Every structure is written in structure tokens, then in C-alpha cells.
Length: 384
Ligand SMILES: *Cc1c(COP(=O)(O)O)cnc(C)c1O
Image (cartoon, helix red, strand yellow):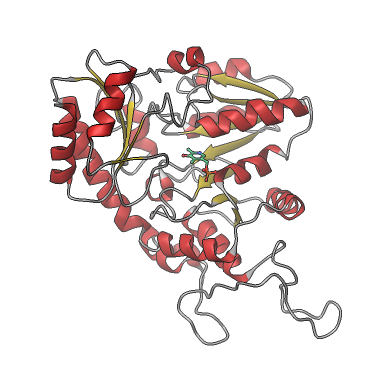
């Protein structure tokens, strides 16, 4: 059976997976083992040591490849470990172009770790493809995209960037954490690498930290596999199992995240005490047309600024929330609220942060899959 012809919901449940060969277990067993018996040196059944490969991780990696419409999946200990592996493809002197509204941890590993190794990073407003074009030079080797961006919900045109660099020795990587393959398929739009913090929507239950890469090209997959095995930041068997289980309901969860996201975005937009709401599904969002083209729906991530609010006003609203939990992270079944300036983006200098719109009063919501009426009532009492 080739999984390629299956539609998304079927792939989420069956893609790249077969009942376990030993006893027919429908869910891949958690192979909690470091090593594998050999009949004679080299006489093994495809697995020798679990840093190199583990059957539960293989099942997850196959599932990831299937849902992202790629050929090869790689599962890591965290999203940042996956990013780390991609940047290790580069050499000192190589240049990377990325967005100025980037996940704080990605910004931190780029600036604070890899700049020390001689890799040069440029952060630009990527929603304007022309700005990227102007930054490309003979040393550019990687374009790192995040869309929708975090937390400003800017939309970056993946296909336009792929066309811009077509034929050049430049890789296009997309952090697809916010959209998930349910909403957006970067490899179909011309990207070379898709990255995930599977900690978020793919896992979906806020119970594990995992990262993922998916690629189409065999050479690129071999290079990334070499780095994964050589550096060792692999996803363990238990965590592989949890993400596999999460992926099986991804489509159903995402549908509800989108419905609730829309209800809350519209509620906030009409609220007299709300200054600004950032959500790509508004027809007056600056990149609404591109969102409509490259995404199936608009997701459950929303940011907003209370009217005339400052740092403390934002904190007060967040602290009054009862159904939304004040916490880092996103993409789980439960609704979370965060304060980017003091939490996810605390590592970005204030000036740079505010330039991209991450003001002190900005509140970010990860809308869960509870009843939207309860979520709106909760926001209502908190905003006042
Ligand atoms: C959380 C996150 C990451 C980092 O992933 P971890 O699993 O926390 O290491 C990267 N990109 C985005 C967009 C994220 O939300």
C-alpha cells in the first residue's frame, strides 16, 4: 500500500504505520531499550543502538513524513534540537535570512550559539518577499521561515520565497509549528525542510517535549540523519509514542482549534476595551490573501493588546483568567494565555521586540478545544 494517495485524516491515523510485526499490536509498542541482540556481529534486525534508530521512533518518523507529504522524517528531543541539527548543515561564513518576528528560542540559538561559530544571521520583515531578495548574496545558504509568526501572526508567502531562490544553492526551511500540516504543507509549496516543535499541536496534550524535521530529498535526509546520530539529540521511545498518539487526532483537534479561534478572534475584535487583535483570518489582515492561499484555515493562535494597556494591565488580565491557564507553550487541548514580553520573548532585546510589535501589553492566546462560550465568558470577566 502506498500512503501517498491517502487523504490527510487517514494519513494522520495510518500514515507510515503497520500493526506491529511481533504480536499485531495496533499501536507501535514503546521499545524502551538502548540495544538489540545480534546473532553474530552485524547480525541484527535493522536496529543496533537506540541513538541511531529505535522502532518506536521510526514509527513516529514515518508518520511525520506521511502527514507532511515528505519522504523522510527525523524526531528529536525538542524543537530546538531539530533546529540545531538544521543549522549544523552550515559552515562558518554561511549566511541565514530569517524573520524579525521569530520564536524567541530560535532567535536565541541563532544569535547566542551559532553566531559564535561564525554563521551570520539576518532578521528581516519576511512578509515582504522583496526585502528577502535584497538580503540574498553569494553566502546565503538558508532561509528560515516561521508562518504564522509568533506572536504577531504575520503571514509569510512560502511559495514566493521558494520561487525566489529556485535554482540557487539555498535551502528553504519552514517552522510549521503554528500551522501544522493540517493547515499548511510547506514541502508542497516548495520548501526543502519542515520543522516542528511537536511539543505543541502534533503532541497536542502538553505532556511531552519533542522536535521534528521532514524532508523530501534523500541527500539532505542523509546529512540530517548523520547530524542526528552524531550529535545525539534524539526523541526517546516514550515521547515518540506520545506524539504518535497525538497525531492520530490532529485533524479533529485542529478543526476545533480553528472554530474556537475564529469565535474568540471575532469576540476580541468587537470588544471596546481591546485595541488590536492579531489573527490571520481577518479579511483586513495585511496578508489575508496569502493566508487564504497557503492555509486551509486560520488556527487557534491569537494575540491582542488591551486598549491603553501597559505591562501591568496585561499581567492583571492574564492573572484574572480562570479557564485559560497562564503558561508557556501552546497547541494543547487546553487554552493557555501568555505574556510574550516577559515569557517567550524575554530573550529578545526590548527595542528589537517592540519594533516587530511585541509591545509590553501584548497578550498571546493558544485557544484550546473547550466550549467557546466558556472561553469567551472567561475573557469577558478578565478584560472587564
Ligand atoms: C516551541 C517552539 C519551538 C521550540 O520547540 P521546543 O520543542 O520547545 O524545543 C520552535 N518554534 C516554535 C514556533 C515554537 O512554538
